[in-house]
Length: 268
Image (cartoon, rainbow, N blue to C red):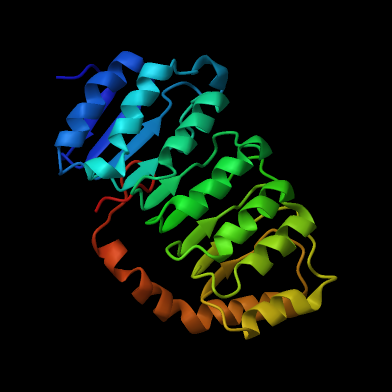
């Protein structure tokens, strides 16, 4: 039915590879009608050596098709979207993030796509308006403390997000402090991964100590690759050890309904 740029696996996962407007206008109505399709992975087939070769030609018509697909009023069955290394131009990503703000997506990967602080407003809106988002992966991009400043408030008052990954972003020390401050109650975040974020927290020994001793939902924390005091490393290790069973129980239903597909995409 479709050309080689679109693949359907086990009627539950759709993989887009270097598609254009005409492809989207065909596939989006199809996906909307198939209640069995739960996940979409948008990937780039180009060699990593020449990433600029893949700049998929998604324009207004294609974005309109995507908007109809993720419209919550149409009760789309798609709950997971993986944009890892998708090869989309930054302007297309910016508009796509705007489309997703009111969607019913629960699991979203925006990993290794070259995000910068230019999309900080869109990310803030995502956390503030996506009423069912449970996991968000922003790792391996170029967002800094400026973006963290903008998403801190919606993150703290987000009632659905339980896992966040901002690893391998140059957040810096100030950005990391702001991020850690934002995950105090009423934030419901259970797991935070912020590895190798170019921060030095060893001169602020009370920050992590106070965070872990306050009333917080956090049960798993990974700050590997940042400069921490030995005491903080021990506190984090103890937190992860004490709550590992609880965290596994928190995600038991998600894990029971999922398996690894195309680099970690949820299948529910």
